[in-house]
Length: 315
Image 1 (cartoon, rainbow, N blue to C red):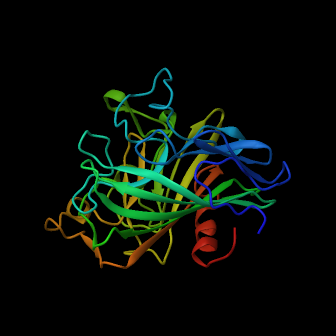
Image 2: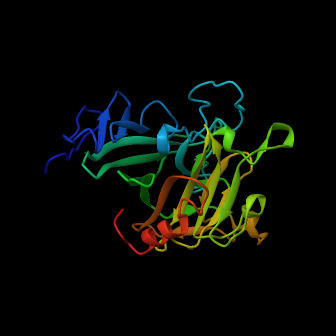
Image 3: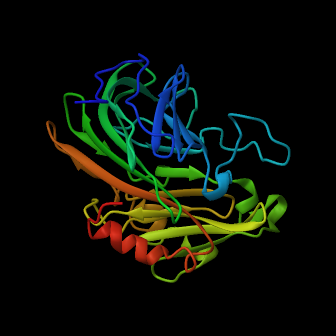
């Protein structure tokens, strides 16, 4: 098959036209171009977990915070573990994989199964190991990222299948997770010292701004005027996901995450109510779509795009 690699750090990419989706290895990261322009880079070496940075929306507008990857005037230097776009959870078999505290675990790139460019879509498929601070192997995942060439915005599908290493896999009841972004500082609802920002949040139930935190919804959209235009970031929770529709750990300072586990804090239920156990030998899969669009949720037709995703229509 053209473009298929069993690969652990080697260079390679399948051929594709410049106006399609092109993925190229650049020493520890994979550069993803769409239509001849940078969309994002998948960083798989030299960090506590794989992540995507930068993430550029329609017209090349940067949609994620630069720090701690780069220092930009005006950005806050809080939550150093919130690196652009990533997947992690704060309690996996009792180990913290969300933060970067000294006792936190790391998610280490193992190998690429597939890296493929194409006229309409590109794909990255990789495996990773979840290693606790004591060096023990907690879990493994296989993740697949699809990048699409669209005329109505930019789009990414993120699918992850995770299983325990030799025993059950237990996701603890923690708000610290899970499928997350840290958005551009200029898009925040509130600025430092609780000064009002220009951003807005809306979910599929019509709940807005600060009231969206901890609520269940099929999708959430975070939008704001940026670089002379209104741009938005929508995250879709797939109907096949466990506990769909998920809860949202979405903050006014720019954290934007889907979290199906944090019921104790989201809904004030008894401690442990959100715990989820995957039996030994079994796996669990989560699927999300990121839609980076122009305008607010109505102008970007976010609800219509969610129905496309939920109905299984190809991007």
